[in-house]
Image (cartoon, rainbow, N blue to C red; front, top):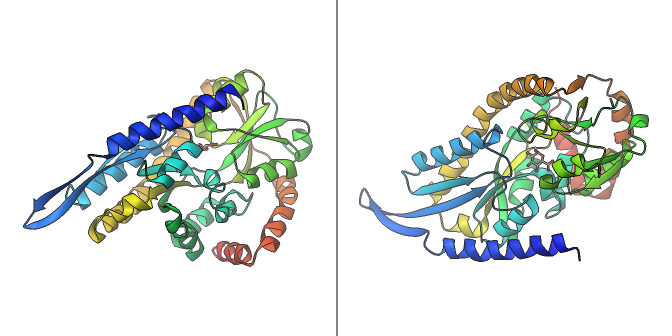
Length: 342
Ligand code: GCU
């Protein structure tokens, strides 16, 4: 086992112990208007920095949850990946050591395979289609809640825009351009299959490792939304962003079932409503942030290329069929998603 991996596992172990210790005193009971309301304090982990638009939206969620629970639920947002990379924090939430996290739906595929649909390239055809599905689809609700007895589940989502490919300096206009190029993908089997189908050589790694991997030339490029260039600083190294718009992968708000069960029904409802409200205001904040990120990236020397996506759409098509044929439930989810195309 690589030294880095051992150190990271040890760090997660230590983190678990210290989080457990911190957990021990996080519940008190107080009298509110004659009724006993259990006060709880939850931590919410995210791998993004302060300047990423999801961070203020998570703080908004925390604020609303406080207000709507009459101050009985306190949520402390821990940004910047200080509590670990996405796989680590999902493990911590699953075990009940950490209460909440915001993670990419792609990272959840390793824990519940139904999440693979969110990484399927071109499953969403436009921003409107994406929002309609995420806000209304029964399939999404089914996927979000089906892991409740596995220690965790999802109570909301935040838009993370569209993902496109970026490289050091090469425009990627068709699958042939990706030949021989190592493109970092999330640790999701569907994203790995996607880059293969799109002509490139997929290199899965955690998000925290991407900047250095780009800098050291371990990879030739990556794929993410425009915020990857600015808030996450990849634009300091990667200067060509081609609008393949292959995925819309939502950021998902997960909670530990243990933490959930400590809440009264009113507190649970307060969390669900606050997640919904903050996700709604996040949509406009996201669009604004994308416009700003493009300007900022251009100042960093990044060139944006609008391309004809059809050759990528065609290359990804067999993945849709494979996905539907693999399982009846997949076919049901896929059809449900497509029923929201207007
Ligand atoms: C997005 C997403 C992160 C994720 C990252 C990635 O930035 O918001 O949660 O970690 O993609 O590519 O890994």
